[in-house]
Image 1 (spheres, rainbow, N blue to C red):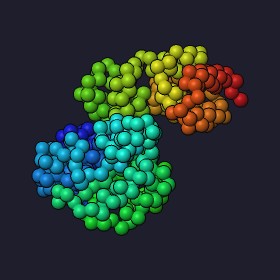
Image 2: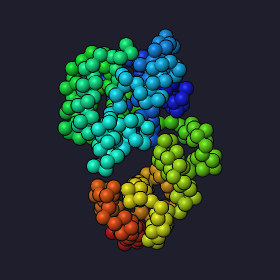
Image 3: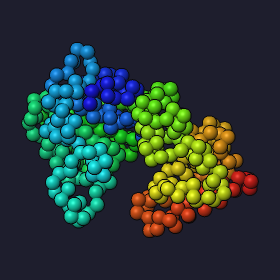
Image 4: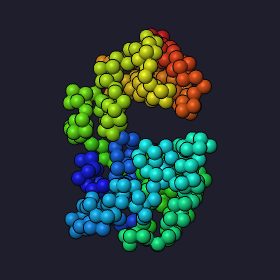
Length: 339
């Protein structure tokens, strides 16, 4: 991936990162800003065989190394991701893991498996195949459990040979402090609203929908693009708070439980903000019902967080959705009874 293929707000950060030295970077920031894309562009630039280092720009995009990354076969690039993310982003699994999943012996992992991390440690100790060093990209880094993170830790402390690490995360606080302390940190910038809107339009989002989708995504462009791909309508989004006040479950009928919880958490967040005199982030203030008491909102927030823990494997998705909407209705209609 060369710099021109990156989102506009990531091009300058790429140049800035390439000017600096270090064997381990931690790219951090909220979801939807492009941690994965920036991490891959950084790895591609380090491995590029025809990069102009004097200009400080990224990979050339057409040398054998860049082509190998494009077709997901680069021998000196190790991608450490949950298996579900590997599949979504088109990276091949190792033969054993793929065979187990194909034979339905297990489902794709949602965490970075310790077996994959051990393979990465072995990869880091081998000689570079193309002579440009080796890169290990970990994304999302917060999906490492304690065992997996500790397996990585020693290699981060004492890297062997010419190997560099990029850890990209949307939740840096979930990483072990010892992992964070051994990386150079870089926080991704927020794009300006106009810049993000223009980017969405360039990706095929109708201009009339771009700003509404950005708001529903909290200003995060990649999340807004994903919502557009899911068919979300800005008009329907604006009506959702009042639908929840009525207990209208049909407003979330096309949402999986995990998606519905995410929507309700956004609504809860904005009502908390409004109740404290701050501007809402995901909805227009005019679209929100009166804010319930802080106690009611805190109770609802905690309940949604607990529900999120089992949302991927609900006992009954329909019943869970009904329960979520019922709880939302009860909380939202408690506004008139505020102490």
